[in-house]
Length: 382
Picture (cartoon, rainbow, N blue to C red):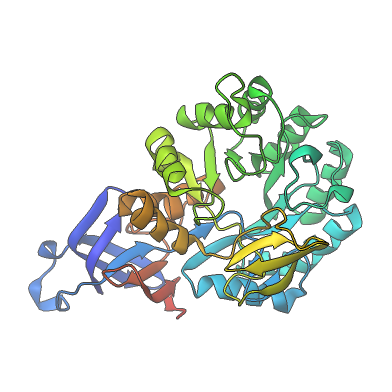
């Protein structure tokens, strides 16, 4: 039985109780609703649901696009220790044979629950806004190639980033929706109408890959992908990923998206790569070299000038806490965007909030939101 401030989708219970039993949350409510003889002493602990990361390339020195199975497990363990109880293993654009090899390597991790599925970021992207994707491996939309990848994955692909303007977008979206995968529009140079059409075409769940990043800035006469994403997410028809780590987006931008779109249509993500939790130095993101300085990952350049941002080095909980501290987002809203909305996006009905009957994924924090304990499926992970 856990007692403290309990953060639920409806808001925070100042003196709340979470009862765990057999790996599940058995009861949640105010302490006053429980017999005093069974209650632990009041505490200043804060309890959140376990975070759910729908866009994560690695951490702890290992990356999902290139590490072996043991390394991939270590990357997942790194994020688990930092409060992410569910994550997708994100890949990057690569040759077909490399993507097939990665699917084969990572599939056992999906099967045993280490990760909740795979996220393919590419290769059907726009070279013009490829960011830290290797342009050599970006190709036009190819339904036959996607069919091969989906068949090899056997239902393990849970999300794929596709540019709205790539050839055959509508067919790709249909294939992904039919496979139960999220169609995530991103790394797109499409105009407003093209991106709106892309976000509203799929029959299944839809997201925007790291809103503002991998797309042209919004202009008042050319709203582009950013304007389209804010419109469709604001209407409740898509979920906007945002990387609120202080590097990818300013604190004010995060505040604006919460005020405009609302936490029910935001997924806070890490976009973490192998350097997450590691010291500054040289790393890689798929086939590309990355240099990390002051915790910021950028593509390595021949002359040492700053390259494109190459993923993040934070966790989702870091992003949630930053949204509270720097963007003025209420903790309950930040937690919804860090856990509840991502769970709904992925169709994971058994987790994502502190509610009776769901999997016991619980984070224990101090009053200043420092992580103290991670519980996943009722078992302590840290």
